[in-house]
Amino acid sequence: MIDATVKTLSSLLAAGKLSAAELAQEFLRRIDAYNGRINAFITVDRERTLAEARRADDLRAADRAGPLTGIPLAQKDIFCADGWLTTCGSKMLSNFVAPYDATVIAKFKQAGAVNLGKTNMDEFAMGSSNETSFYGPVKNPWNDQMVPGGSSGGSAAAVAARLAPAATGTDTGGSIRQPAALCGITGVKPTYGICSRYGMIAFASSLDQAGPMAKTAEDCALLLNAMAGFDPLDSTSLERPPEDYARDLDKPLSGLRIGLPREFFAAGLDSEVAAAVLAAVDELKKLGATTAEVTLASAGLAIPVYYVLAPAEASSNLARFDGVRYGYRAPEYADLDDMYCKTRAQGFGAEVKRRILIGTYVLSAGYYDAYYLQAQKIRRLIAHDFGDAFKVCDVIAGPTAPNTAFKLGAKADDPVQMYLNDLYTIPANLAGLPGMSLPCGFDSKGLPIGLQLVGDYFSEAKMLNVAHQYQLATDWHARKPQGY
Amino acid sequence: MSLALSDVQRIARLARIRVTNSEAAALRDQLNGIFRLIEEMQAADTAGVAPMAHAGELAQRLRADLATEPNQREKFQAVAPAVEAGLYLVPRVIE
Image (cartoon, rainbow over all chains, first blue to last red; front, side, top):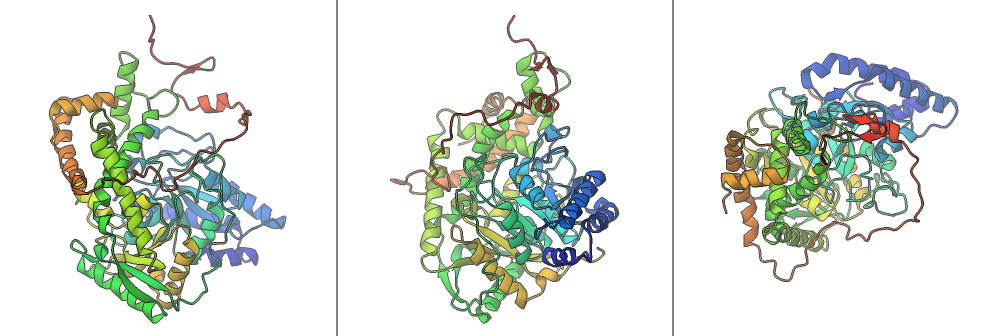
């Protein structure tokens, strides 16, 4: 049961061979047994989870069940869930019990899915290794000396270790795709505006996007069907007719044109990762695809651009944490200003402070044009590069991350080295394009390697089709770490 | 460019984050490393390129000017550090 896909569990539930309560109990047992090893969950609330499972069973008894009714899902702790501690991995919110549901949570609730718990993450989603969490690092289930990636590292590790059949994540610069790659699972960052950001604690609002993390592309499509949709509560939510993201899964790949960006296979890419990704491309060719080299000439500047834009937006978004309306407040202070300054000094961790300071600086008088405006202009150049590429290909393929999982602590003291891990994922965020990572092999240390696909705007169904066909032909996605 | 200790203290002040002098020294070195990376942007020719603020190029939606949210003051204030009589308490700012 623990290795079953959401799709399979859904059929077992529908056939009455399994109840939502039994399923929730089994995964809660596994979390009890294994979470101590990998620290994937921040909050587990047995009673709430089981109550949701019983409600799901009631829905089914009343003949009101859908495909996700009774499916337990791990929720990244960035999503507000009514009555659940919602920390965003920060001391600042270590006492924050959310008073409302994020739209994504509400949609899953409506679909009858069961909240299995809140997963660990880099503080305010700022990190690529899950080491910036106030709740301690998550460990990679494939090797507990290694990071799981970040910022959705808890979600990725939980799915890899079979502590949850699937999970949610958010991706601002790679935070779904990079941990999915490093933990050997499948994760999708949809087109910007597809999933509502309401109730998803904001980091960089023009980039943040929620998405599913699961064992297979097919499961991601099922989750995305529930998560996506117009939401009047999010001013950047796109008003589009609902679509079935699973509709094209079974289409053959003959005639598919895959673009291989020269810049994604250049210096800095680990040779074992390169080999596995190119082997995956060969597999796709066997399935009928053709390849063309494409150029994303400005993508090389994606990291500098991102580390201006994301901190700028973060410095503004995180101004709300001042110790007045919610969250942490410093115990001692002289006056109001001192209360703000001490609350924020004590409540935020080092990486969050660094990014707030970068953002404050680039937005400050005299520096705006040189940094923020220049970054926004290059952002357009990057988006144009993708537009040109999609004139000659249907989907772009490349590595998700330049390397496999690295050792805990290896890059923790060197922000620049850490930032370089998102070299291949950030461009899609800047352009607002959909992207995903799926397992495509292992390195000689036995660590998973991720293949990244990037599609044109609103081409999730096509991207998932490519991934699903690849997963029908290979079994990398079905491998699991030993000892779980 | 290179940030001095006084720059770090100035932006920390703007960001309302207390930073001690020893923290400021460490931050200066880290931020200067990050800005060396950021400076790579200056090499790009962006003459005539319109800045892109947002992926979607969205226009703000308008809605009817009606109260749509129920009053949930008590629920929302339950998570506040200090409240009294429906008000948020902060240190006195007006003598």
